[in-house]
Image (tube, rainbow, N blue to C red):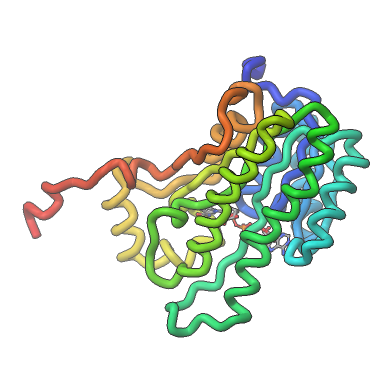
Length: 263
Ligand SMILES: NC(=O)c1ccc[n+]([C@@H]2O[C@H](COP(=O)([O-])OP(=O)(O)OC[C@H]3O[C@@H](n4cnc5c(N)ncnc54)[C@H](O)[C@@H]3O)[C@@H](O)[C@H]2O)c1
């Protein structure tokens, strides 16, 4: 049985990027806690199996395929989710892309494409959700930012900038909408082991590096972001807004100065 503090029973939730590695795991976890879901992704093909998994977990879901790089689609998806679910208690912004390149090779098209999905879509889904949530008495918005908002690596400059923007927008929305009882928070995961990040950890030396620099000794699993999302979506976080939860296996907690002993 779910702890009532963390219960999402009957909550209406729109999850973007629901067809992805993290989104699909989050969708099932939300359904297991009683949420009624609108699953959104650019890929209708990816949404089918996620909906089946939600139903197998005893939940219900509608699917809303659309390209959130289009700001008009962002508003339309939010309004459709609200209409079909009969309300909108929680918006989880999970859609994201990356094109990994050194700064010298990034084109204006790369910049705009990444910014449109990672940053602009979060802005306009949130903007559309605001009046609907306010009219419904409040709500919670949870954004999937990234540790790269504060801790960067080569080839992810645009992605990192867009995620820093997501963390910043989280604070701005939280500030403007607190009086409407809408809380806005984000999570900032370090590398979670998915296809999305395989180019980062796929090589042997990178895998060893990640295991070495991460105090908990390994990369994260998609299931390990669920707890923070459920916490931020539920009443368990009822007096928390404008904040980021870093999920990084301890990476930013500090370094090990004895690591050089045998080097
Ligand atoms: N995997 C990680 O290590 C990690 C770390 C920090 C943050 N994140 C963030 O978590 C989120 C999910 O990451 P993931 O690893 O599951 O990646 P993923 O690629 O598996 O999932 C992203 C989903 O977004 C969808 N999407 C892409 N463009 C879209 C568009 N224009 N409109 C609507 N949907 C679109 C994709 O189809 C995909 O299903 C992303 O925002 C990512 O930036 C991931």
